[in-house]
Length: 550
Image 1 (spheres, rainbow, N blue to C red):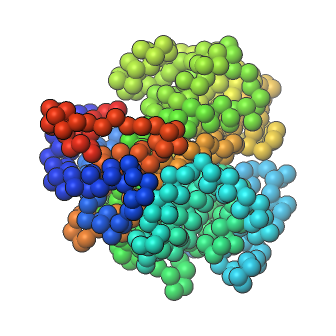
Image 2 (cartoon, one colour; image 1 turned 135 degrees about the horizontal axis):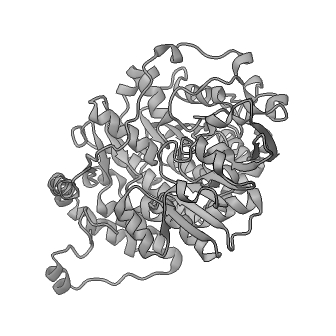
Image 3 (tube, one colour; image 1 turned 90 degrees about the vertical axis):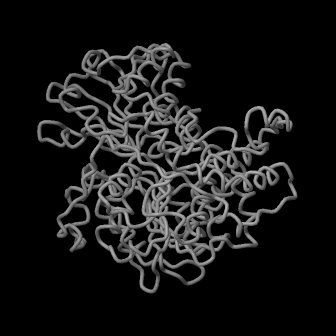
């Protein structure tokens, strides 16, 4: 168990220097927010933006595979669809859909077998169909309409090119919203190569649109496990191109580079990671003394935790369940495993539509919050025979086991809202006595010998991005945070960041939030000099200490 008070003292002690350094910047950023005509001097950003090093205890030990043979060979064509296990506890940690069904994309030619060329004559990409680029461009244009803050950042900093010389390799969901971020990074001077962090979440037409503009994208919806790692390798290993920045979601890209290309990894100037799974891996490396580059933990920034994790999931959980199962929520017995920000968002949405929601939790604080919000806190085994729907969002593994799946009633639904697909023990369902039946895309019946059917969504992978879409505006908040983190790490003077994991400073979180307030025509109240003095604050922020819990 960690000592929260000790964590706070440590963070305050470590952050004191950085907070003082950023006071002048606080005034600058506030002025930029107030004045529409103000210009961002991105050259000053590096000297002003100081992140807070964090030393969080890691609850779950993430083991990195030591067997170098896993990395020493590539599968043959015949082996691409094999039932080989993935090389890490990653977003591909169950058998792929393509490996599981004879009626799936096995009958279609793999993008790896095609030679495609964009209008500029480049073939440095691998997507489903480059001819879909025009449709993808329309999707991106729709997303831009609700990502005005990120577009504003792009326009303010475009002339200064703060990412000139940056070679960013990214592994995230490839959606229209991510495309807006990628094109922002390119507009700020970066060269980008991109792959997908989830084999089901790629929007093929968006991947084609990015490839058409010259971004080297290696991703398509429905990749096999072998395809997944092949795409990552082709992003990293390109002749005459060596990455110096990483933007990761889940840690698979970081893990691959660390194990397979250690010399390249050592030359990376910074890593930006946005998921709890990837952050756990970074802290594990740091604790072992193996993290040789500075990393920014975006997942625990206020703008990610309190907006993306909460509000995004509050809306997308309903969308994902409705699109896949047409389920009626009213009166259904539902269990949400985990009451963090993702769990809170899911529970609020389900409760609003009349579902009877129970919570499972290991943390007494989160459990007490659930109780005060009107939810029952139970052990899954206590209700497993009555539950209609189980939703996991813990970031852990084997939250729903085979024994529990065996006891679920006929027609019950199981899905996951966490990043990694380790939460539901899907591998235990790949046995001869159970029959898998594809119902529709990302929806499977797992049939027991007695005829009982359990509905499994997205094979235990992330439901919302695998089966539906997510709210664009919320993703704009996270994308803006990621862009600023990349700019800071790339431009930071040598010695500012050690080989450790850092949090964004409070002032930067406040700046990202302020950029998005104009969408709502929101007007902030300003402190008087007397009020600021009374509270001991700078008039322009930061308005909360680093240890403040929103």
